Image (tube, rainbow, N blue to C red; front, side):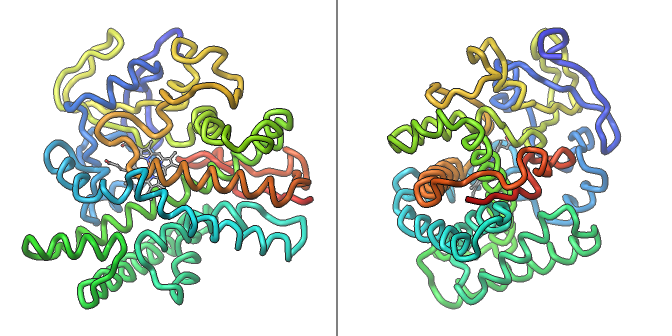
Length: 375
Ligand code: HEM
């Protein structure tokens, strides 16, 4: 499609049509054009999950669904929480979280499900840390987040879990209003009360967005990255011998898997030409990051995993105004996980080979449902 019809009209699974944009250059053009709206409530916004619109309409939109000035202000209010410097300060705590998960794996003995024991708990506990969820609530928070993500959770149950989590976050924000706290939510509360009133609903939406955006994505990259490293022992050896290579390896793994596609959807607010095709005002567009990141115009031998490659211009974190807010955090989590896992369990291997892995061919964010490993 990318070489023959790089901007192509398709039918979406949720009903309606959208333009699929598949070239690296065009994807960046779509994502950096302010006339491409992220507002999920627009009628033309590509519907990639049946029934999704109802959920979107019920909840106050967080920054990922905002445009223009409103988006810029919402992002500016929290961007300071995600700078390289601020995230580097979280390194010791992230290392502790990863070590505790690896301790539990070693104590249980193989085979274990890596997704359950490492991929899901690490980002979930890191988000607890970020938001200032008290330790006594970690189990509740983790189990509800896992239920929300799991495909086997029936839709009615998932709805209840979402409500439960939002209620929990609402109470958490209220607690930060009562008792000042030195964490992301606490600082947001302090910032807002200085200017006037605390927007409790807005903060709940922000916390919920961080949970949704930062949990399953990072978890899937932990599983798939581990798999790719196990599958390429020569390349793995190069990073275990020299961890200074890990950051570049993480970048290449992000490019290679490009797990998020659906989130980079837009609606055209004007007639806009992309790749020689006229997209009309009101029409939906899906910028396909996976295809962009495998575009031979942007990367040599794009289908090869090359951990030494300089892959920094990938679009796995999106591009433009909405480029992933948590990218520095995700990078640090992935670097610590891979460095720690292969150092502490050098004999790690898949328990049932590749055939034993259940991949998420049925989900918006790619990954593995289960991945049995042993050592
Ligand atoms: C946005 C990918 C981890 C928070 C995005 C976007 C992508 C993405 C592609 C752009 C969406 C768009 O253009 O509409 C990923 C991947 C991750 C990851 C692949 C892990 C490997 C995280 C983490 C957090 C986070 C750890 C925070 C805890 C966000 C937020 C946005 C976002 C808040 C919206 C930013 C905005 O609208 O301005 N992410 N993400 N993400 N991500 Fe991530």
